[in-house]
Length: 115
Length: 115
Image (cartoon, rainbow over all chains, first blue to last red; front, side, top):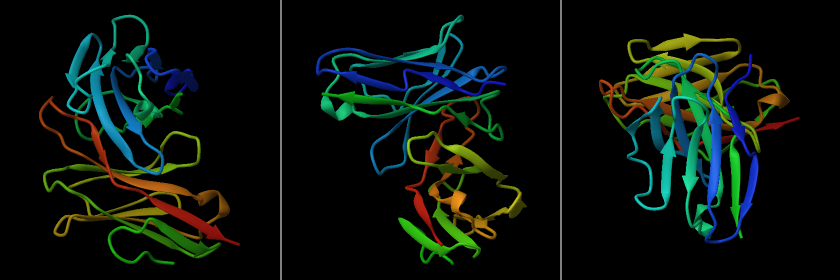
């Protein structure tokens, strides 16, 4: 019974390169959330997706960041032209439904380091 | 041991004592709350949740108390063990009828267990 699966666990990118982070939700979950965590800080909401739909991207930076959750395959968080400030842990979470009362389960995270 | 004030970055308790971690949430309309435990290098792990129509909920060795009047949430851990060492986050969730559904996290409290 696999949980939320994220890969890669660790990713190093040079400034200006692209980073792609993948997330496969728990079996039976159709709602995916991405969060970012800076060192010594809490998690900040970025985006909430259902299959083929972005429901809420109010936490996403306006430029360079995008997310998708296609009909088939994992959810992807894409960061173009990375900068040092993008270095953080990116956590994906999933839930079976999107309304209050559905527990959100997190993956183990993807640690992005920009050099 | 008992935390003082609404937010304490670090709480140190003796092994075997009870721990109380406090959290102030921001939105009086939030109707669902979760406590997560995060160990170093790992993703947040669900501990216990509570809906806004409840004041108290008990799990195994953990109890969550909700005071909506002052927007305060607490996590009580009985007979604290070394494995309880982690950062604990409270999170609130606002159901907005299909719109923004991400969790808003508090800053976190680092629980340290003294032998």
